[in-house]
Amino acid sequence: MTEEAERLRRELEEAFRSRGHLYRVLLEELESEIGLDQAIAVMSRALERRGKEVAEGLFQDTLPDPLAVGDRFLSVSPDNGRLYPHEVETNGDMMEVRVHRCPLKDSWSASGLSPERIALLCKLAGSFDKGLFEAAGVAFSNQTWSQERGGGCCWIKLEQCQ
Image 1 (cartoon, one colour):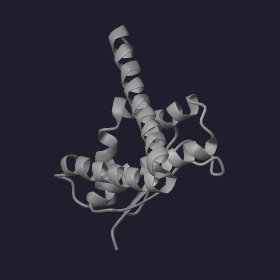
Image 2 (cartoon, one colour; image 1 turned 60 degrees about the vertical axis):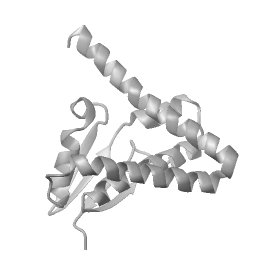
Image 3 (spheres, helix red, strand yellow; image 1 turned 180 degrees about the vertical axis):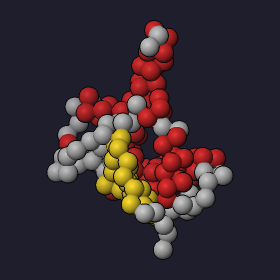
Image 4 (spheres, one colour; image 1 turned 120 degrees about the vertical axis):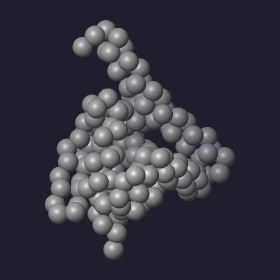
């Protein structure tokens, strides 16, 4: 890998970690102004809305099929999937993506946050995915990271809408 490519890779990683820090700071500021429950509600709505906005462009030519949507999503994974290393399992028309590492979660861990606060931020970040995949016309569920569950980061499941 060239020095330039390695520099760009580090800058990309830092940009995503910065996004994680922004989520953390926004939650803290909203919590101090309106309380934790309202802060969670506001951030969840905003992140889900942004996911829907991204879906409009990302999935505009993609059929509402879980495998097609999942493949399209993975095809634009930053740094060819290296930023969010993952494994994929398919079963019929179901796709599950298990993310092993996330720069947002890494930023929260590096900030010294408690496992409970990291889990909360992971759940909030999952609101973006909810908006993204539901706007693509597939059924979405996820298990975001928690200390009890352990293992990597979020686990995303895409299925046909019923």
